[in-house]
Image (cartoon, rainbow, N blue to C red; front, side):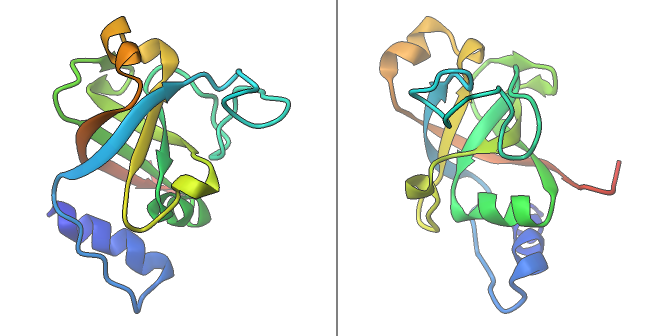
Length: 144
């Protein structure tokens, strides 16, 4: 089912292209502060590239997939396996509210940066760490 959802999203803008993503995807993960000039855009305002305020439950996603989401105004919620983090969307559920720098937007890999206050000291000390995630929920901009 999740594969079909992924294929549907990609087909929205690229009908000729079919991505065959596994149910669980691996990502290199870390955290960031959307108000820190060294970690984000010039004159940071705490608003992600999807036009929403970065807060608990927000993630920045680095992949070509992110470009398609923005272009088609699609909101995606991710379930991240084994994190044990409670967000406004549920335990281990995060909304893609931001994208990462262009160098992280590839077809081959996924990168996730969590809102800095969502991660405990253990994760922050790791720097970058591996996670497994899957798509939990998809909403088109004009749907509820």
